[in-house]
Length: 333
Image (tube, rainbow, N blue to C red; front, side, top):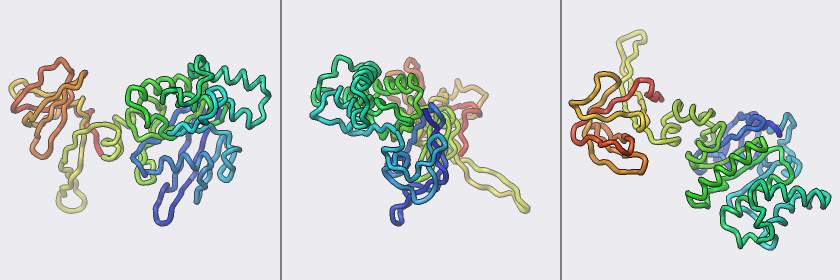
């Protein structure tokens, strides 16, 4: 497979910065996801890697080979789009074979490779159907098989599951991760869905306004977010303004700062039952709602409303309550 490297890569459209100067490495065999809201620069980054968009500055390298100015066909990457882009007049097998035929691969090798891909995506029984006869999930698996048929150095995926319903997306995530791991293929994946990013990725790059604000493992991004934006985007968080005291050369100065706590890390007690340890806030329960494996409780703490996630079999307190959490669970922005 291959390692992907971006060095100081940037792109502007008029006065709009689509991608600020960016350094990024996707290691050999790694599954890296660029996560962020619409317009943050993640698709621009992927299209620069694919060769569909030329950067204004910087260098793109695959396994040390400079491909910054190389056309897409010479980069040997596989691409999977949101809209599948299958040929409607071709069967499943013919769609998978198309790229191999374009490269004038011998017919016997094409037949063998198509069979391998059908087995990989578990569509052997549908080889002779046309795209219109397939479900959305089946079509996306055909698109993936076609991208992998001529073994690419990189697999690039641009929000491939966003048009599918939630249950189907979850199943395809599992399939994609199985396939990616079995092949060991270096993968750059684009999504705005945090659950998708957390479930699939070895590492995540969270993007905003054309910049990668944090790059790390899913656990690092979730438990050690560097900014309030990242904390909010990667999962629910309760935020509290706190005073910060500092002394320079003069009198003691007071500044404002923010800390955060994930809802699942907050304990909730009636005031008479509250423990004496940990950090604490007082509040009033506004409501509670059942969410299958959790109960979500809204608590008014005066300056804002916090959410507390309790196990489903818990009987949540009502009225005046104390919220507690461990100091090590405090997020600092």
